[in-house]
Amino acid sequence: MKAIVCNEFSAVENLQFQDVDDPVVGEDEVLVDVAACGVNFPDSLLVQGLYQLKPELPFIPGSEVAGVISEVGPRVKHLKVGMHVIGICRLGGYAQKVAIKANQVMPIPDVIPMPEAAALTTAHATAHHALKQRAQIKAGETLLVTGAAGGTGLAAVQIAKLMGAKVIAACSSDEKCEVAKKNGADITINYSNDDLKDTVKTLTDNKGVDVVYECVGGDTFHACTRVMAWSGRLLVIGFAGGDIPKFPVNLALVKGYSVVGVFWGSFIAHQPLDFVENMKELVQWCVEGKVKVEIDHAYPLSDAVAALDRVTSRQVKGKVVLLAK
Image 1 (cartoon, rainbow, N blue to C red):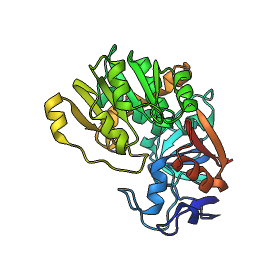
Image 2 (image 1 turned 45 degrees about the vertical axis):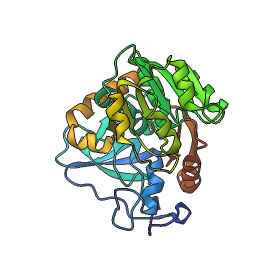
Image 3 (image 1 turned 90 degrees about the vertical axis):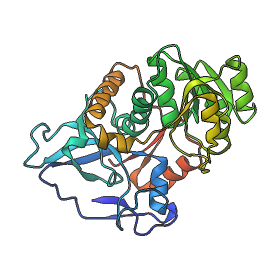
Image 4 (image 1 turned 30 degrees about the vertical axis):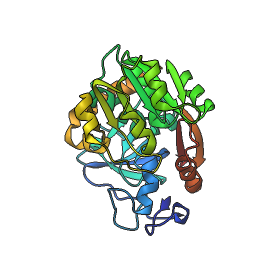
């Protein structure tokens, strides 16, 4: 089969599109013929050796796929050959086939297009977990989303509106603000033109926001630390801007808010039953049209470098996927 292979920790441009052996299916695994694979910002960190996880070399990146089961391990009883599924694989997704633990694979209705299904898990599942389990956001509360036109930012906008929150979407351009508004944002802020802190304070009559979904880091994070309402929750999602900020803890003390880490991979490991319930709810919302994955661009598998470059350059409005078929 063909796959994208990381042979050394180095620049994304050094990834190789090459022939590799088909995966061997374990007793509790299934083989998925990959139709599409989601492309995520951490993938670029992974291949450069800059992520928490450092896989043994060589390896195939890619953590979320959609496809069709072509083989089932002998201990797997609830999945069958021919099922359309989404799978969470941590590694191996940038390939034509991937073997995945059966408990990380979920059947999906045929009405969900494969590219959307492949991109549903990481972005939407992170936002769902963040708002539901970590923030415990309530109807009527105000949410600020930074990087709101990216894949996980748009997911947070959509899901927060479903949960009854008022959503302020902060983006780096008017075009991205328009995308966020089309996905349900009540108010948008172009923080390339307007001061984020001052604008949020004006919009909230100096009360601040109940929850922040912070994806960017750097100066954007620092602005968010100063717009929190009493008993607010500042969700740390990631650092797409590249700068991991240092947090002045006296602000949390004085203003009585919490800084809450969100790491979806750890959530899966520590709360597997909650993860399953979340995914069932997400898939149902997707079928009902209440959430939708916005596909910014779909690249052939061989163009994985271009796909990753698009994600890391922060051009993306929604999600980027690779098509293996």
